[in-house]
Length: 310
Image 1: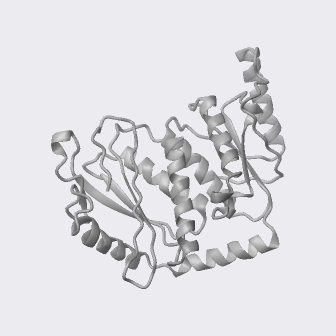
Image 2: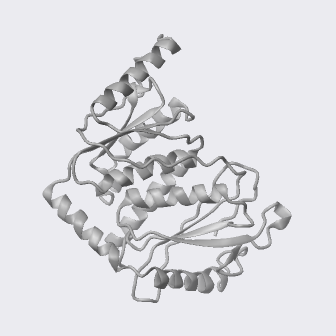
Image 3: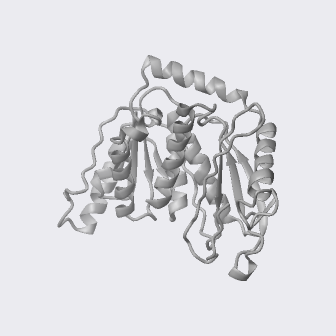
């Protein structure tokens, strides 16, 4: 486990543990520990819409140069009205931190990912700087060009993210292409596969791993049991607290990202005496012990780290 030595910092640290359990079910745990100052938790947007995809972001161009704030505001409202007329859901979200922004966007993407047809949704984030939204959208566009990762993140290929009006206002437009017949069959098979996981059994395997490796072999000197973390860091301002165990059976990367960032929101909202770290089990990601399974899990872990650092 990774422990922050600066409990008053807003920096978030995350560590990933890959383990092989001795039980018959493979599991993929992710451990992340945080102790920054509590931030105001924003609402997580959930909704889906219908239509087509046509998005491209070029941060090097600035079509808004010289435009007054009043004109930008009027244009932004006009674009939102146009989207609403087209049947695109407008999802207001009071996110004002990195973790609430990611929770809102990835939860929206997870909801959309459950649908096989074309989808569009607009997330309005008035408390997030437009520059941050531009960076988020640009990075997602770049991600889709990186075949090393996209080969193991196929569910993201149908997504596109852009900033409404190329930055005229604080809103992200999330769009998907329809799944092909082959993709529909693959997604349906994955959803059926998700029902095979026994949460109790998987959590027991994860606890056993922590007891045997993290505690027994002293992989982390500040973890003395599977239930309490950050032991021995009091002098550095870190208070020991309970470990929370969370679970997602999803095989979809968007759902996993949503689960991760909602866990981060939970950590940020709870005092460390109630919750000091979370172990998130993800048995549906990279299930099995072959090279492709490992590469799939590693790609999802890299995706998590990518948005921690954005």
